[in-house]
Amino acid sequence: MGRIKVAIAGIGNCASALIQGIEYYKEVNENSGFVPGILNNTIGGYRIRDIEFVAAFDVNENKINKDLCEAIFTTPNCSRRFCDVPNLGIPVDRGPILDSIGKKTEKIIRIDRSKKSSDIAAILKSQNAEILINFLPSGSKKATEFYAQQAIYANCGFINAIPDSIATNLKWQRIFKKAGLPLAGDDLKSQLGGTILHRALIDLFIKRGVKLEETHQINIGGNMDFNNLSDSLRSQSKMECKNDSIFSLIPYPASITIAPPYFSGLSGDNKICYIQITGKNFGQCPVSIDVKLSVDDSPNAGGVIVDVIRGMKIARDLGLSGVISEICSYYFKFPPKKCPDDEGYQRAKKFFGGLL
Image (cartoon, rainbow, N blue to C red; front, side, top):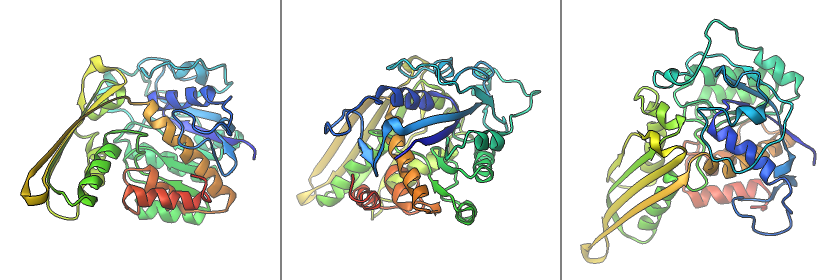
């Protein structure tokens, strides 16, 4: 089927886990049945090893000009090192700073505001990139829009993995539609994270006739994403996405509290999520569920993004443009068209030709 040429903006922990994963799974026998950690071995004939990284962008001086294989393990990255990555021949180019660095992270990341950004669109064009993934920190609205525009200039599809609105923005929907390029977003769901688990429990309550009265969620982590989100100004878009993802499932008034992410530097890339749900079942008798989820945060995104990349390539092959709602509904927290997860799964399955 050929290669899928991918560029990444933001070489943090999610990029590290993804790049390691492509190397880790490249020798997988696609006909071997279930492969731990992978939703789908092949999609539309595309294998995980068909994903090829061709360009990378960051603002951290300690990562710029390093080969991508080295940059993904450069501090403050703390994602688990589960696979050694050979030299990729892809240097990390300087991206624009704009609003990509918050007050919390600028104390940790070494940046040089006197230096100019690389010509992003020119690099994407020269490397024949087909898809650009946005892995910038949450709250990077201006920088996200900049990269979306560069993707347009370079004839790239755009995956917005963070909460700042692109796929849900009517203006950007029209721009990508007019450009004849596919768009997916916003805010990638983890493979098994707090949001998808919380939604599954709420769905269970509703389908089993249990009246949900109150529910709470709190997330604790120690990576740079949590550090960034500990700034209330940076976490606003993230909180809007998480709240919308939970509120949209409950068809009646209920007390819902999604606490702001809590940064604990000792946690590293491990995320702890606590979920509590209370309700009433037959005879108004009480029901309560308390759940603790512990998971490596960054690899949790890898199993999902490899499907999204291949879905976007299929969309390009089919000549589809604008928002690819079948991908967005299942793989993102804040899609333009919201639906229950089982419905989103069926929509994605139909789009992929029954391959899921």
